[in-house]
Length: 344
Image (cartoon, rainbow, N blue to C red; front, top):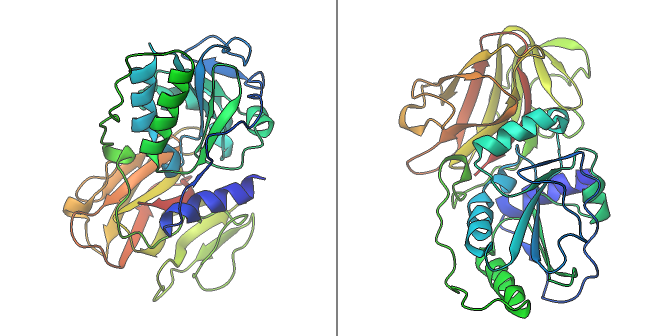
């Protein structure tokens, strides 16, 4: 039930709940991997072909910040323990419609420098076989093909690595370097800040909350919206002519804005260009001014940028003390698709 998964993934890390992990045990045989519609960085793999290897299966999706921040650790484990018998498999199960497209997944895998095997699970068959409900989720199988451990969410990287080492030793590996990997994610993969008080917020009406523009959302119909006058923390609104669908709000004619009052170091927004792929220009502000040194990796210091592909865009990374801020993004071209805010 993915809607439940969305909420748990967001709430568990924004509001400080403990990540969910299992003790080392026997959770039964690892499900088959035959449901993938394609594979990247590898020929198709199966539970049978992986027998004799310790296997880490990482469920992720490339627009989810909670999936991206563990990547430095997953990539480091894949490299460090490969010769000792570990196989890391990324299972990319999509959340948004454009993530079903293999070409988009392939591009994301390449740009994120993921070199271990990735199963393209666009029909959620592997997700369902594992009865998974979370992004990210890690399952570790031993050399006999039994799931011995699972972990849901970010964090607990030292514990996960200890499990990898334990199962490799059970499988006959010797001479392991038992020091934990020393990694530090940068850019979009950097660890979250310590003062995050804003939750993941969807813009499409199917999951939207805290909408504060005057009047109600006109589902699937064009409407001219006015921005909220004094939004409270975590309230947001639209300005201009938008059509709000179940997954995204689409700008009908420029200019159009989205306003959000947030409290966190980072602000990300899942965006897509026009359906025909035309880039969309934008400009962001903080409290009505250019972000300057607080700009993100996808915006310049003057707040300008372009939406060229469907993905997660880091628009704000604050350098100073964190407090409530008013974020605005103005789109200067029609067809911008806005889907989901996440924070860090």
